[in-house]
Image (cartoon, rainbow, N blue to C red; front, top):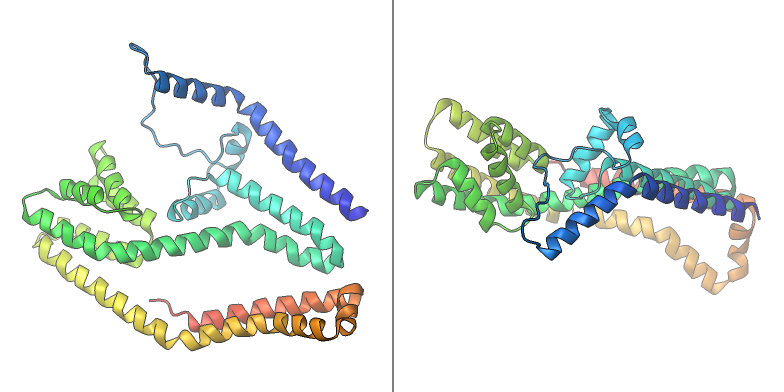
Length: 317
């Protein structure tokens, strides 16, 4: 009964947050819907005000945006979301993390205080881990696309394009996720931002070592001069060699990575097999407080072991 009450309180708080958000942001939503209606109608003489300024708010809820503005945590989360390619803002991301933490705290009560202590951090960090995974996949896509994009950039420069025009051309010819970042660089410097600052912002958004090498090469070339096409050609060759080496390294570390996965799944497989052969033998593990503690300790040990073995097999380049 206590678990049901806590669950009801949790979901009630979630619905309350959503309702308050709808009330506070109702005027903005109505204005946005009116603008969409005008765009759909296409009425002659109607003008829709469009802002060219970047929306840097942490949340559309005013008091939450004021609370989070300028904080280091908010900035780091905003960078993570941008590098992961998510359009979500830091405010809703934090609210979702807190809601999942409360959910873990509530449902962990089934296994006592230890269960809550384990599930609450899992719920809190689950959105962060998901975004880190998306960021990692996006960075791999950047690294796969960048050498070919540099070849296109060199060809455009040799054809007489300026650097800015060449970046715009490459951005329009390159698919996501890299293409829009080149176009965004071009748009930022076209609207008055210094080329150096636009390049540094490009580097911050992409966040890979290849992007840092690319931006550093451009900045040094702008200061010292030289053959930019040759520099970018050599850089593209270096990036391809890094990709080849990374694939070879993945082959060499395949065994410890597979061992980590097998060892992480082995305890669960043993429990399932023994439960199928002799259910009564495993029953105390699920019906007693001591059994619940053993499950919690075993889960924590498996997670820690998998983390350590993954770190051993993962080599930073």
